[in-house]
Amino acid sequence: MTVSLSVTHRPGQGRPVAFLHGLASRGSVDWPDREWEGVLGERPRMVIDLPAHGDSVALGSATTSVVLDTIASSIGAEEVDLVGYSLGARLAWDLAHHPGVAVRRLVLGGLSAGEPFAFVDLPAARAALAGDRPPRDPLTGMIVQMVSMPGNRPADLLSLIEGLAAEPFVLGRGAPAVPVLLLGGAHDEMAAGIDDLAAMLPDARARRVPGDHLSALHTAEFRRAVQEFLAE
Image (cartoon, rainbow, N blue to C red; front, top):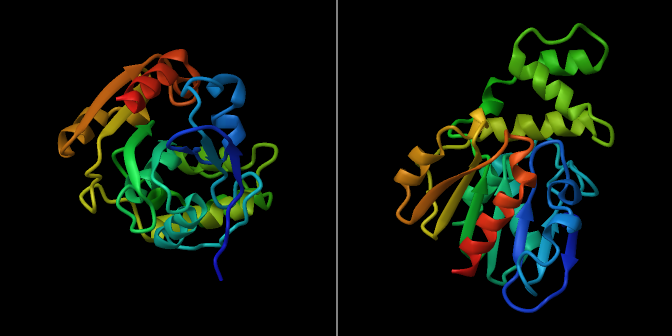
């Protein structure tokens, strides 16, 4: 049975732009109308809540391949430009060559060159959510803090992380062949390797915008970079 995710459609004319948000967020938070209204002219926008996020269903500990199939089914067969941030960028990298999605141009914001989820101590994270002591390692502690933010489903998000870690992000596997723009905040340590990532791809460029991992996404410079790249 095909599972559909929650997708908010903003009508318009021309090729749609699909947006994928980051971990422990949702589409309306990372891609709010007040910031993106009119940025892409009259083009329709498709804002997707990832599995276990926002109004979308949870997929348990489904692997990356299953998550990608679910997102592809929710986007549909129409050609799109794809914009992802953080976890959304990690998934967009693979979606760009998924047989169920036709991607013309790809924007990857806040993308880490490594796979962080493989290093999350899931037993410690689950124990902390159950009231045990906080995790000892900083990464797991940060993940627990993120998934526990108001409005989130912590257990479902940890299961998602478990499934993604079981089939980790590998840069050398199916690198995007479409034109790619890599965006990173000037003070975002997670996106420190975007110049090296751009050098790996046949048609890519990297660009820095103000801010850290949380704030760069919401800057006018980020939106302008996306606007200019997708208008080419």
